[in-house]
Length: 296
Image (cartoon, rainbow, N blue to C red):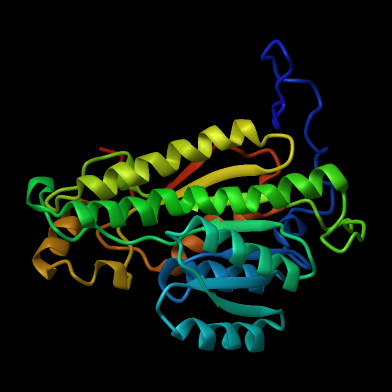
């Protein structure tokens, strides 16, 4: 039996999703007060900026990291600044078992419910042309960027579906009226749509293309109980690109209509929109934030 909105004839059933949010004014649609969000790869960069945005909007936030222990201090600062619950958890995104275990632990410790999941963990391809690279590096990139996103979706999706079917949190308590988010968001990349030059990164491009299409496919499968979308950043000034020579970055900038890389903060609006009730009728969307790079 399908978890989505298809009937036995593969037609979408009418009225298979929650009604539109009540008219409370446009700014209230962006509030995440009382909701629980999990963000992977959030010790720094894009993930940390998203965590800060969600906390400022009122969400309790769990951030995960692989090896960057700065995540714990970041969580403390988020709690102090925004007066919400925030905690860091170490997570091996390449292990399906570990992803499931950590997500279950977070949901149990954060009021027994899950509203928002951002699959952001990722690594770059650093070995140039594919023929010059090592297969072990290819596997590492794909396992982290693509498989890790799938593992995250499966771990989050089982909570979204159960909450939809049972209408309760893990403790058996009825979900309160603020439970309406049910949003899965993945960090994809413009590299899943175009071939970057002058850097060569076939494995990364292929993995990110997979992430975008995965989200579109899950948007159909999960239409009754969760919205699924992705964000495709362009060139962002984060540590993930520190290995790139400055002369290569200068070439990037010459091809960006806005003439510069973005800061992680400039992505917050896209992620907040997709997590909030403002996006209640938005699913299967890939938001490109690239300063116009993919226009030409």
